[in-house]
Length: 433
Image (cartoon, rainbow, N blue to C red):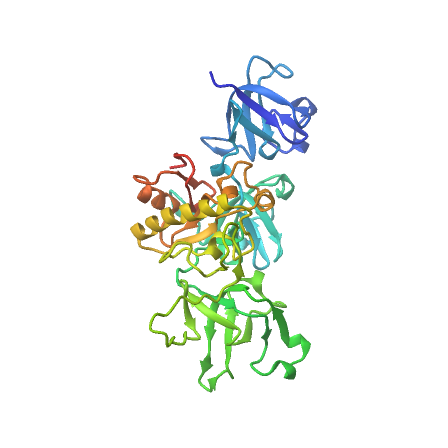
């Protein structure tokens, strides 16, 4: 018989109801120290009405506390193990999405205009704030939420008037997962500005020496920016060998300004992985070799130099930049490099089958990054064996169903990230399907 253990990982309290500690009576609380374990008969993290307000519900086996065997504990303070293997939280239960506020807005209890709601149904929120989420949704069985996103706050300290579920207008927010935007969906051919050498952004397309310090901003080689638009000329002519561009997200704005210029020899614009400006110059060689302009780095077990825009496998569409977060997460050993190669081969097969771009949200994560984003301790991402992806126009479930018949590793979908699918080359298993 499987031995089920609840292991407390932070000093906490067990609760008779899944509410804020301050809203419960002393007799409804039971203090527990980190490291304590309890054998349990069963556990759950959600019921027919949804999750338990960020708590795990569990039933103790063959014992009671204050005469009760069923209690709740805050989900970040405990884990569940079956015969020593962590089963909760699992990879599919990671609560990693971040809600970021793009402009001053209001959170609402219902997805309607704020002026139709009572004061206790709204809460003012200022631009620049961010919140960790348990889940989010942009539609349910009855349809969408009138251009709103419904979300459940993860941290109790963020609850508003003791309530964790709210709505926000989708134009005022975006949702991020391991540094990538997962909502609203990004266009597959979105323009990307790639900086190819140390340079400056400018407010006007003239020589840097002619501009005051307030009109320039230094930018490093290898930096990437998602664009709303770009241009290299207007009705009056070109921009003096500069690219004019408008940044898509407020988080990237420079000094709160979205529109800048950059010298066109120091940056390029890409769409779907292809350079669209400046146009690549033809190579006179009869057998041209690939020329990579991304960030250079070394990989364990290899003497050659790799580049962030270099395909992982010959002729493939997945790059080392996608696997290493643009060269900021270099694998420390050959095993992880081999795992990345193995996953790239399988992902390429899946992409070829579906025939649409795969947008990588998260691939290899070093331990410190995995911990910082809330990843579970046994995550396949730690070994380069897993990627969380989006396919424009497809839900995570649709992608999972498309590859289910042949994918040999793990396939999972996230209740809190409906557009994302997890694919790995670990052991065969599925979740959320």
